[in-house]
Image (cartoon, rainbow, N blue to C red; front, side, top):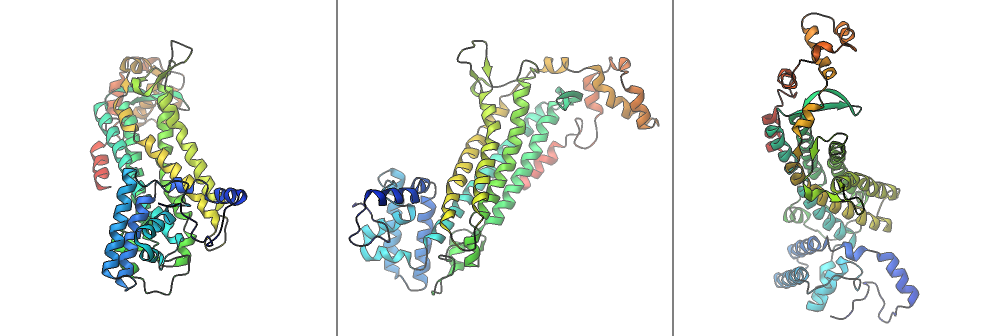
Length: 434
């Protein structure tokens, strides 16, 4: 294949050194990022061609030829025979170039009634839908791993903390169940986000529609969208806006990962020594032979900050008037980088949780008599003593509590959701409904 020219290049244009630098600045990483979008772009191009055939811009024979050529392009791309590299400005022009090389003037018909604006929008939207499906599954997998551990450790004692100070007797069942419910909620939020962005932008061109009776209902159904995004200008104005909402769903999941990772980094320290991580998730020191470091957990903790960074990058560049502006090209890198890194992190979490080794003896040793004070105060209140009076009676007076059993404390914590009433089956049912 000969080296492609820009779509708007003049017949005899030659690139000098300055032109090359300008083009490199304008395209940036775009064509490399389009590796994530290319298959979706090909899918949308096939459906767009079907739409053109439905309004007699293409004949059935022409549609068959274009479809076969796009299938060939997809096959070559997957096998590595077709390389999407810097010789192309972006993936969209690469598709048109391939079709034109194979089919001549017929290949040039593919762009009838569409702009690269709605072309990138539909490919990105399809990519984001798949990313949200993967995020939802990761949330479900993490919730299931937590539910399994909660069931297995519902009677396993651990100290409960507030302000990182020992507070009350708690259980590992309660700890795991807290993250099970949070990731059940995260999965629900992802589904709601998926429903919210499930709108077809294809057929709106550069933001003002076209003078063709495009069958947008057909392309909406053929591409698997739940509804049509109707107004062409809103389609352009939604670029970045939808991306922020998608990243917000990722942020909610990673916010819980940050808290989980914080807990584990504390609990694995010698000062706490409540759990041990699987060897696969820790590393040794380069200089200190005695060290095993929770590096994986610490990097998981850092992922939320990276998501905040890409979210703020997109939010900051959206100070724009209506319609398409080239600034919007710069939403692609932070979106894709945020999604890919978060998904790679989340995929590791179920195995991490399943492999945690709880140091039961150390957990029980960490229980102090003062940690039964709240239970005793509630008992007195149940007997008719005003709670504040019971509170004062027990404050700094824990001698009578030393004989209490941690397991007895857990067994008596019967309020819905508490240690003796975790309602794990109800959480599991919620997860199934999601």
